[in-house]
Length: 403
Image: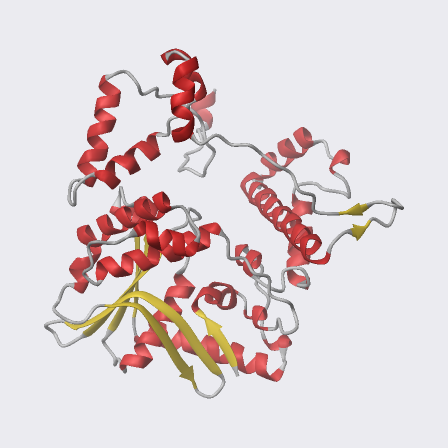
């Protein structure tokens, strides 16, 4: 029997080969961002359950994270809950938070996950709709449809939903609370979606249990970065080599005339493809470096074969930072206003977050806009133009427009 967790679903459902990772050691990746997210989830669950005097400082202390960050995330999440999310859950039924989900598919797979918010209602036409919300407190935007699909599948089976019923699952990007259009991504799962999803899991699980990896296709992609087989996967290695070939690598980048390579690829019409390949290579390199550091940190110094007496090792280094609040009185004694401005950096994003955090309920957005307007009127805002590269709609000029 295999167990598939919601957090691992995006990897497995994109490439079933991830299930063939028995014997590969798992590396603990829970850091401050993850712990901050856990703390924010706990605070948001308390709010959804009707608590209003939430001690974010105590919650943050329990998880060893920044209290201010937890307070800000709670404020942003509350804005989304009260402004948009609660309407779907506010139908008089029970609203469950941090709901543990588990269901069996036959006797070969156990599916597990946790729904941050879950409720069920029957609409006038007799259709049952289950609502699931999944808070995301990080800054990395990526698709979680496969994870949401797993939640929908578990909820469907647990509730015994029938043809015509639906499961609505929303990814809620808490940090984007300033725009509900950007902050909330909605997926609707029907009976057909659930059946397709269950069939795919059943197929992969059967192959994994039987050890028949040849029955499951490889599908390298961005999800590889989260796969335990990353360092041993043949398909991922082949994909990486193809990416390097696309951008002209021949063994060492010293041999590549990058300007000529870009010009040649541009003329072939494959510049965007090569750009994406280069970005993927960068991600692979970053991940490899991270894994090397983890290996050395866990196993100690690693001898360098061609450099006798030398080894790769993790060495302690110190870096000094300045606590702005504690430093402020000292700086004022030595610097005038202009000098202070040169050593202290003000983040407009943080200004808006702080203004929203201290405002009364229902006034957070207005408070943030008000302080921005006051700063603008005072001439404190400096706007500048910059360029970014992205794919856009484009109509090539006609020969008559050129000549």
